[in-house]
Length: 113
Image (tube, rainbow, N blue to C red):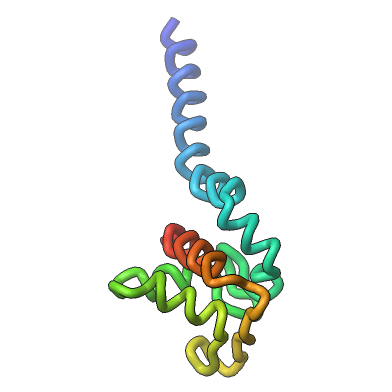
């Protein structure tokens, strides 16, 4: 009887661990923000979790989370581009992204912190 109880707790514990570990990634995968980032080709240079050509979106969120104007700042950088902020590789202007889309992307990126 005890072994069945321990086995059930083991499976429940494993399930809880899996949800805790993979939950944020699964939410990021299912988000409208990620869909928009894919649509606008943000993921050609960025990844949610790792440095590609540009910094990871998690790193961007962490860097700017404390700024009171973080969302507006990032939205501006998304549309206008930037140079020298994260290294030598410039981020080109994204003229195809509307101000509303840039605001949505910035808000989503900041939610990744």
